[in-house]
Image (cartoon, rainbow, N blue to C red; front, side):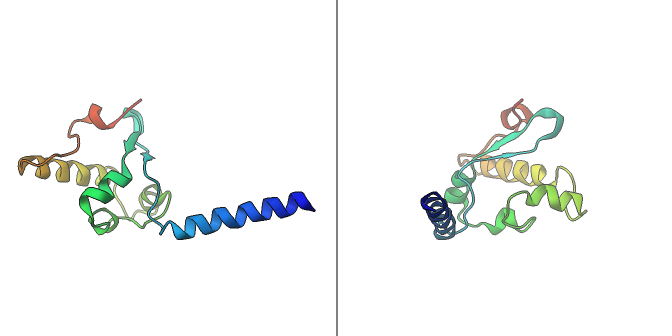
Length: 110
């Protein structure tokens, strides 16, 4: 009985912690990058610098696996997110501001 109480207690705390976190997602994520390798994505760094979730999330919902699901459902083309990232990074760099990587190998890691 004590064991069940402990397990239920931890479950409630974990759920409450996730709810109080505000649904901002993980600080870092790994996006599927195909044969070139996955893409480590600094989600928190993007939230802090862009301050507008809709810049990216207009393409897909704010939930784990949303990109893959949108592609599978035909709502998002393969590489559409990658092209949006590249465009944003290049435009930011052209303005003389600090920007993310723009070459394949700088993003994709095997």
